[in-house]
Amino acid sequence: MGGSSSKESDKDAVKSGHINDEEVENLVYTSEQSSKVQLSISCENLVNMDKGNQGLSDPFVVVKARSSFDDPWVEIDRTEICSNTLNPNFVRLVTMFYHFEEIQYLKFEVYDADTSFSTASSKKLSLQKQDFQGSAECALALIVGGAGQSWTSDLYTYDSKNVKKTGGKITVRAEEVPSDTNKIAEISLEGKDMTANSKHLKGLEGFFFKLSRVTEGQKPILCYKSNVVPQVNRTVKWEMVSMSTSSLCAGDFYRPIMFQIFAYKRNGQHTLMGSAKGSLNDFLGGLKNMALEKISKQCVGSGTLVINDCKIKTKPTFLEYLAAGMEVGFHCAIDYTASNGHPSSPHSLHFISPNGENHYSSAIKDVGGVIEYYDTDKKFPVFGFGGRPVPRGPTEHCFPVNGNDSDPEVYGVSGILATYRESLSKIELSGPTLFAPVISNSYCLAQSEGESSDLSKQMYTILMILTDGQINDMGNTVDAIVAASEGPFSIIIVGVGDADFTCMNILDGDEKGLVDRNGKKWARDIVQFVPLNKFKNADTRLLAKEVLAEVPRQVVDYMTMKGILPGDKSLVPRGMSIRQVLDERQMSFKQWERENSVL
Image (cartoon, rainbow, N blue to C red):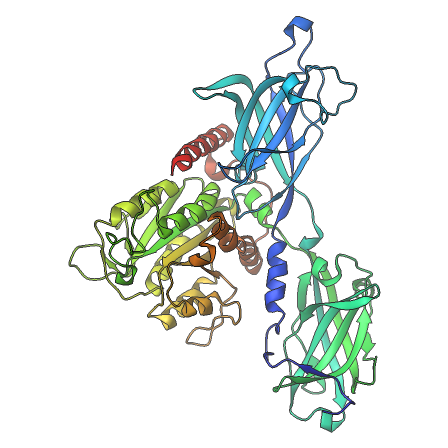
């Protein structure tokens, strides 16, 4: 060991890919998927509340939000007052964060300022003293996923018995706020002439580096660790660094970035060769060669760090793809193996409780309820596996739960729930548990539904597999997932019950990417596994938040991999008229709201 070298204990380091910090980077990257949006609001043909005063109304809008039907409405902002008009186009923008994995309910209340006011601000006005014009409700997903990222509704009044149109309409448009998290730094670099005393290089298998951003008077913040690469012809060629500028340098192009070069040892006792500093501004300005500095006596090596290229790119966002017409489809696969227990037994995972629920139905409602906003026709295939759809017939590993081989689709999440509940008295439980057939079949269907460079025809599909335990075709399943990673496809696995889910954690691939039996690596991470028991004593909506949080990143990764750019906003998807789109989406929301308020 000795005092002449710096040893970093890292026995879990690997020879390729990000080492150790990959989980941290994934968490940071996932958090960056929340986009900030601005809502612009306008109204038309409002009822004149000031007729007796020989003038027109002075309208303003109060915006409220909630995350479930059980939560109270919370005011988040107000527009300014537009004086003497029935067709206001409000200047004040309402800013909020958009989360794909949540249902964000919004309520827009329109008032006529009836008390005296000296400024256009409505912030201090008591709402009880103003004339109520009417309100409209929707989910944020309806706006950002709508044609032209716009939503229009009639205004209504509500009481315990009636819903009544009051006259006038409100239109809300969404636009994403640009963010530094969308700026990606791509740095190509290599090491030259990496040398040291032979005793420090004993057992050397290659070199890796760490990137840290320098902070004022504090320890540098580690933000990246490279793969391990051997030195060939006195040159170490690492993979290109590609990460957001917010993670690399907190968006500050002048902030120094520290490179630390290590000699990799299999025993985890890596040797610090030296370090170098430079900023993105330096690299963009042409800085190429940086000699390794011995910042302490512990640095034992020498060499040169060469910046071959540095570029800043703007990475498209999930919202931009939605705006261009992309839709998100939903497939559901349900485990009918005997290990679930007979549905008539209270101990069965398929047992329907007196409130009409079980773990399977809760997961379908919570996850599917989010996704269905993003699919225009709301037709979802529902597959079963490990059961006998024909009594005393053979076990099948991918069958339509509705019994229709030519059309396995049902309408909406309510249709999935109804079909599932009905199936429990018809489908015999059997086994074994095989995933590969249902993954392959779902992926083939997803490809046929819309793998296209034309985003108005692009459908990105999410398959949710609900299962109670271990699988019996691990090799075939990995092969199917690796093949599906090339397409517009993601897989969510929800573990139901208390079984051993070790295989599911392997399929999740967070610790080690999947490789099929021919040695082919998956193109990208498309699997997310979550055990339902993790949320046993928590709000069930947290399940949807966790399993869907990675979807925006997976969509963008697929589009980037295929070289598909968002393009212009799609005003009218799939040949529909704008009025059809607006009317259908509003009716769909009202239907969804009625159904889910009683489920």
